[in-house]
Length: 137
Length: 179
Image 1: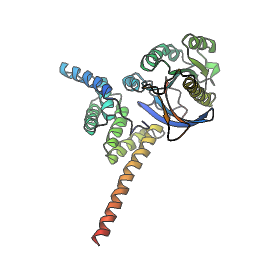
Image 2: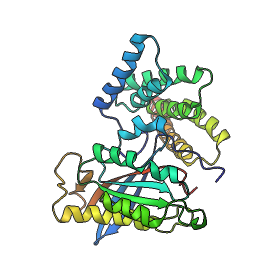
Image 3: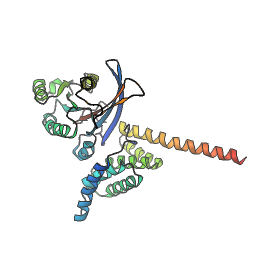
Image 4: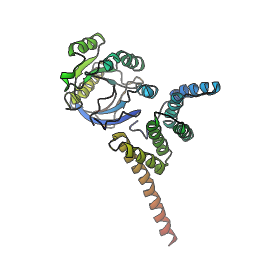
């Protein structure tokens, strides 16, 4: 549990907030708070399908009018996308946040982390590409 | 501090310090103080070996909230978790709204360590983390903190003799970032 991209939440915690979300869903109205809490745990899950679901819930929250927590949704969208290895999408969200808050250290650090992780994958891709080019010769 | 945004969820940090000749890696989770993050931040208490609870000496409301933070800290951590009370903004003595004596008494009544510090000048900041680590180390030495217990918050790394991991959950009532 070293950083925001690698730490995972416990499945017990996730279940608690899943239940809260489902209970409200059955009643017909899920509050922003409940949806945000559930999404925060989903993007910290070890399973990509959960993370994907968290991203969808956050996107939906972001589109709701008059939301006060849009900055928080965008940050968690960046975390979710980076954890799904959608680094470019994550970096785009973070660039947006940095335009509003250029000095935000949390955003800067996540940007560095996502850029390094994304770059490392590009690096491996380039090496494989090179290997294949050499093999063809 | 115009450009000092609220923490989003949790900010992670690590720091290696030395206590009694042992290298100790502190893993620090700076948790958001806003109510909207309470559910998220609560999930980080478990497994913390120490907690730094911060209020603002110039704003009484932050001091008044301490008992609810302390309840969370006590309920969600193990009985040996070291809890350190910190009065931030000690540099703004002229605007003080909570006396040193009052906070000291609150700390004593609740078995907390206590210091006033300033994130702005750095006064007592390093000391607070060091003292927390020393107290955790002491609890390990005298046997009151069992390293084998689940969620002790401490990992001993046998491959690297003398390196111990301490999770220290810092939980400020915001407005105290040093940016």
